[in-house]
Length: 254
Image (tube, rainbow, N blue to C red):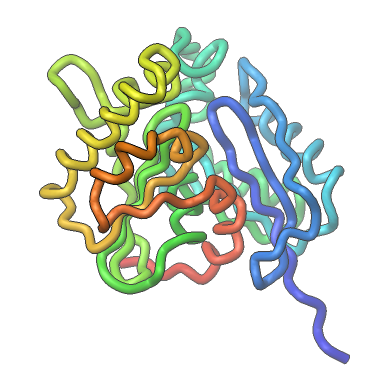
């Protein structure tokens, strides 16, 4: 009798929504993705409750992958840009939430809650695991509430950097310059031009072989901009944030 396939509950945590599904070893979803608005204010215990509610609507899993916004090292939250805010992105930081998240071994908390092996990475890293070819120097940038970044060399995951906090145009950072708030303010056409400028600015910084643009807003880049952005740039679907939850278990580190 053949062994049952390993099923993965893959959870993609965003600033505006939290999405999840259960996938087999081939990355095939065994149920439609469940998506819920990210509730605020959001404590670690509150996010665990969201995970429980989502898991109850999906098939049984053998392990869990969490794609988490912000800086994560070995399952520990170094910094998260949204969940420390009172009402979500771009609202006031709550000092109690800041210290509740900072230094928290959230991976262990999820693992103890569900009794399942758990992998926790930055959300762009999980996204990248679902799309990289595994050869050459590949960079993944996710466009959503803010900017996510992951770097792969020969399919191996490099240490995470918070490119989203790098300064741009003197008085702001990438998160604020190309995030969802600015896209709504500018409209897709002007915002798309900013994406092209960002790619042009970063190309000599990374010297990538391929750049993948993903996240919920990648599909909003205007066609006329895509024609000019370069053949080394690939647009990938937002579903990679969930599908990558399977391949992420096989990633090796640089």
